[in-house]
Length: 352
Image (cartoon, rainbow, N blue to C red; front, side):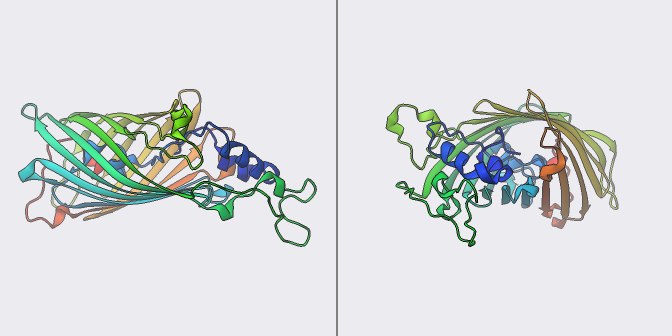
């Protein structure tokens, strides 16, 4: 889910005649506000939620994620990521790394980042812990000029393509760079025990400059920066049936996640149910002003391998015509390869 109002890429796909005109207007405007990509399957991409969640397993944990948002509009948004993290008992620390690529406007704007994570755990009492985490990443933001078209290249009668099948030329020139590199840092904290967890995650704390044309000396730096993203999240885990050598535990995990970035809000409320090898979830996403989507998920687990599919049914006026949003999450957990079965004293089974 993009934490933003329907942006320029959506408008470009909805109207061929105004697509490029609107892009040009917004591209050269002084106010450009960007947001981070967010997975509906946040439990299968926990490093994207909170740096303090790094290291929830003793063994290596690998997560692969893919999201395609509004595919009927022509691959308008797609996000890919792969991550690794694990807990190191001797150091009371968790480590992790994420490689993420986000394409907007069918590759017009591409963001690729490599981020490292570190967390440290402190024991509060017999079964309650607190973890703090930090993250730092190197990010590249690229603009594909070949996919841009400007207003002077759109004929009132024929649109952007001439009757002969060739694009109309434009006299516009681009003076700025088409690629930017920047450092991005974040932090987080989570308090947990076997009954509940609650966490706070902060991303883009250094508000990096992401403008291709702007100048930080112009006075209005907020329009040139990636805003801080705040995430508040929590949940509980209700054990319905204990597992054994042949079956996994059955549990219900109600969760809530609230995200805010640059005035835009997202609230996810729902529950995740795991019955032996089968998992499923139902969520409702709200923007605080109107309902946004109903999210359903279904997954299967076999030994160290889990795969989950989820679908976002848009509740706004766009409805199902834009194709909803699709996600696939793959989790590879190597815990079962260890000689001794891990007995975690927490409520983080949803993240494993």
